[in-house]
Length: 358
Image (cartoon, rainbow, N blue to C red; front, side, top):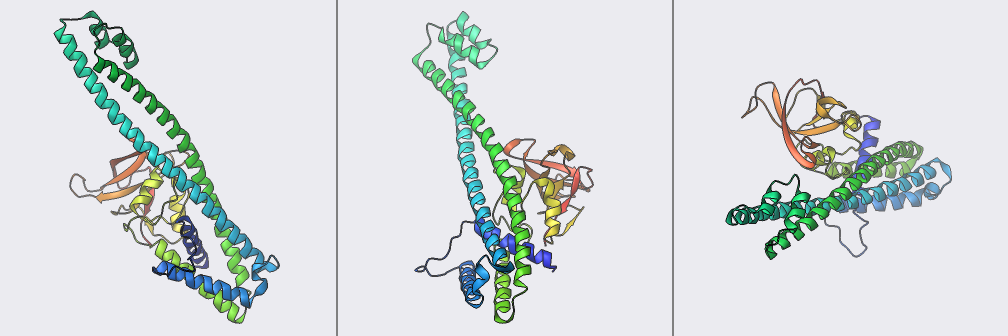
């Protein structure tokens, strides 16, 4: 493995570790998981290294400066990841509430239609109700219905509830649109900060290379543990499920990261290049469990952010002809936070390529 790939693995592990919110082990809490034990070993080695090289954690010297900058950048990444997680959680709650309100609205509209129809039929063609049924839109129908002298209390309650729910839905939709914009911007900023963390990691490793004797051995052990932590948090296998998610909720990247491990960050347009940079195999043949990456603008992909999906099946299979594949995606034809499925030719011109495992 190339040194640059090792450095990226180290950073991916550290960033993912911070992103999961796993704090330091309490003095009174026993280490139970392999990850906890690795963290405890790493803490002990860092303490030993500080004892061997007292000025390592000061701002004097190349190693000290690199380590200080690296630690500060880790905290920046962790803070931004926490903000993204919080915003994603808010969007999840809001989208669920919106879905519930939409179900309530549909039911109330159905009930109101049934009552109105029944009343119309029993009154022998009341002119007001006829006007309601011929209204151009929902608001107009509500205004006309209010003027009917024989409107029952049940209808009045339904009308009131409908208007309130309709208003709630509009507010929720506006709030979601605002949060989506903030979420997407924060995700992009987080990707940039992780790139900075990568650059600092390379600088830190270069500084550590100047250590001698036992200090050099300890630094090598720390790097080895970082790689083991990275492997635990981001196992390089296709289809093994998520290993963390640093993407904006409801987007194509967020969805794919819920289906398989995505240890890199950035917009969909960057995935094909980012995956290759850390050693993931790529090609132009679809495989179940692979990520399909589209060119910006290709097959309806965003010109700004690009688009990715998750390969579900490859033909010839049930309903899929030879030379075609079926994939799932989010925030595409069905809209934000909605999953849909499409079938495309293996050599479709809008496809940049497929991302497999390591």
